[in-house]
Length: 301
Image 1: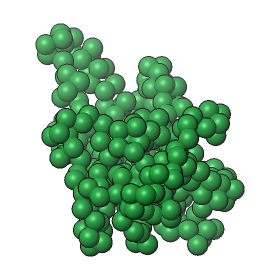
Image 2: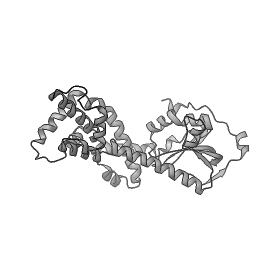
Image 3: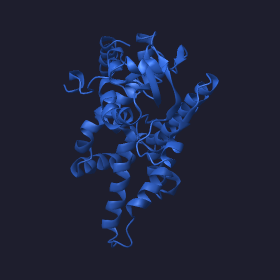
Image 4: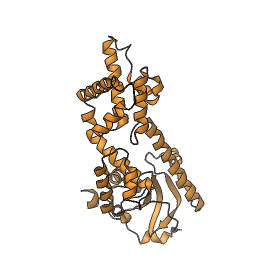
């Protein structure tokens, strides 16, 4: 995907101004896979929420949201959805708002009942309630919290489970695809057993050549490769892999911005799938290939 097209998708996302915007984006960009649109929206939503986290998490604002919730309970005939409505109005994560409200609820309860530190609900107990809303004594609040968690595609215990599952599935797909191609490898666990601290998903036992570039390792991401996310991965992971194991490949299963694939000569190639048009490395290539300094200007800006 070209960077300019990615910006069009983001512009439309901000124009829609709705939590559930995937349907409209699919109509506007029918050529983009649904998974790619969902990943783009998910990542941009996370960035937007991070920017407003401390504002909405400020004690005075939480108190205001909680008071509104308590007031509306009395006028809505116990209908569920008050916290979700507030989250949509303030353009914030429903799950994070729900957790703020849950913590504040028990804080107020402790003050009203003059409970000491030993009698008050602990943070770990609140976290457990957030994961299992059936433990919340106030059943109406429990229903509100649960609805927020189920409606949030970016944060919350449900998202954590889905994210871990997605990561496991993509790693399995990578290994299955490599096995079908007859490519021998060792995985992350085996690398850690050998004493490596930072490890890619797989290290190839015999390097391959893809599009004229040597591949020693492969890292896969169940996400879309946008500029900010790719910079983070380069800084935190990919250059380290390159330093330890030589040139490699990063796979963004939900696509990536084409202009980011400009580090091939420095040892990092980007793809959206396991390449099939490959050959096993000819050692003579090493005599011809020189990898220049990685600190290119694009990633200094």
